[in-house]
Length: 177
Image (cartoon, rainbow, N blue to C red; front, side):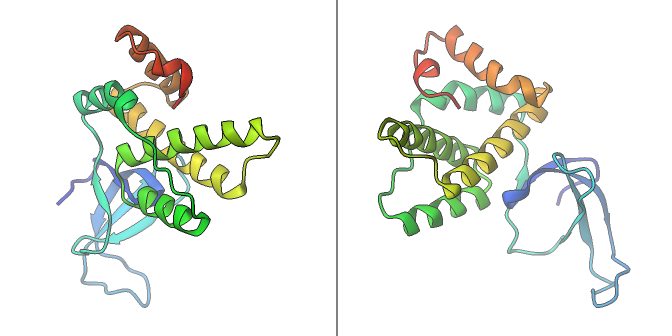
């Protein structure tokens, strides 16, 4: 069970703060059931109510600082999520985004960066689907790393690049995350 004040990753909503754990007084809702009251970090006006006892929700604690640093260090070794079929690709992106796994978000970002680079070289534009999933994966990854590392979200990309350069990795120059 999570605690009030804790940060969690909730599906495609990304990093959320648990603002309360209580019953809900809304008509049509079970007033005896406990709910997590979540507030997404990137949308302070939104409120999400999740049953505490639900086994259907994808929710986990955010990375610790050490786990976040380890994830950043492993980015060059994380592969792409390359799928040729358009419908299967979108399904895979959706699964990865909703699955709450940072490594899957990195896979999406690397895949779409590479895919868009190839499309631009052929004179084609980025697809709406690619743009959508790139934005979601980037927002979720950068928000979680920002909270875990206690840095501003706008500094995350520079942090990743700097960390890779410190480790002597050249991947930061060819595949920005």
